[in-house]
Amino acid sequence: MFNLLILPSEEQLKRVKKQYPQLNYTTITSFLLLLRTATEISTSLDKFLMKYNLLQNRWLILVMLLREENKTLSPQDLTKFLGITGATLSRLLESLDEEGLVKRAVNKKDRRAHEITLTAKGQKLLNKIMPDYYDAIEKTFKGMNETDHKNLVKLLKMIQAFK
Image 1 (cartoon, rainbow, N blue to C red):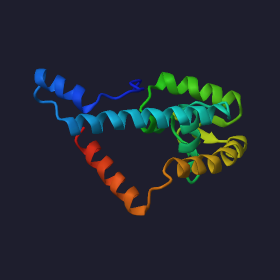
Image 2: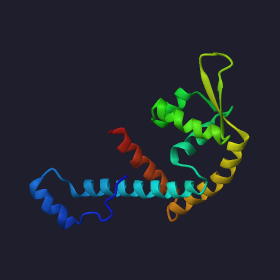
Image 3: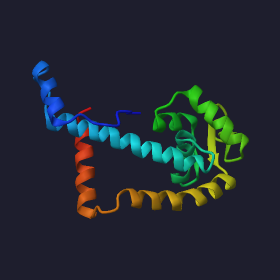
Image 4: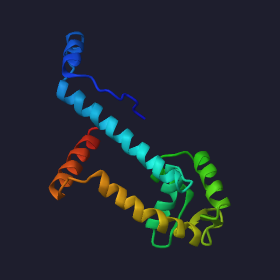
């Protein structure tokens, strides 16, 4: 979360630049706007998901399972895709399992392994969430045309390539 609500002005940054000459106004402004925008979008997503008693990681697990042809993934794949620890995943899966949204089972081919499957109840919940989710995304990006979207994706990929 990036909580700076009022970004520095060009004048303020020029004063700071006197002390730190490597400061580039355009770069730092782009960076701060990107952080601020990401925080606002994440906060909006949290509010949206709360209507369905979900937080981002619980919802993302359901979405990861939805994308799979057999609606099933291993816990290892889920931790890799979400960038979370096994302990965190276990807590998330426990609550999703208790609510009947996923089913945890031993893998039939390898009894040492486990698999997580999206249940009919989980699918039903996603069927309620996802149309509204996609509508909300469209509203977020209203006013942008296809070229704008392609340019944004290109720029964001450039930034990610340098991390």
